[in-house]
Image (cartoon, rainbow, N blue to C red; front, side):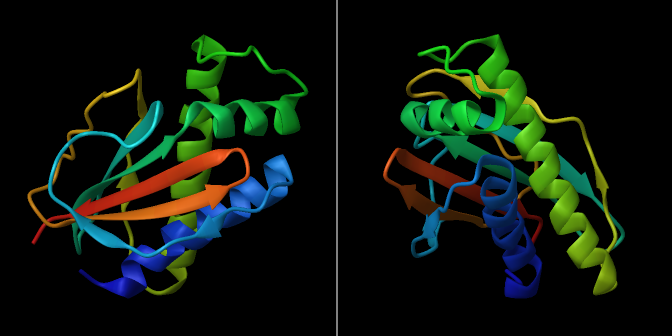
Length: 154
């Protein structure tokens, strides 16, 4: 998998959370993921298709972190994952993918984005729409963790 294609998504997540929620996430070490089980409580999944590749991206948040992000961004904390939280995760997924799309566009990569799908619940599954290796990258904060998964066609 091409690191030049992955890094813009990681950079974009850090930028979105920093600017929109005034929070810092600490990146961990990327790993190959072999199952479909989500690591957190709520995930945004978005498909991407372009002339060079086809793939998908998911961003999963643990409940404590996404509640803190909502508090910082909107001044509200519902105390649990609800429709407002799932809407927020969809918007964050859009913003991260859009930011990465801009960075990649400057490097000559072009792709279209689908509408994000949001799935919530402990033990939910993420089904990537590409037949390729899945990379998972953890991000930590004092409020919980987030995970980006990226999967592109071989």
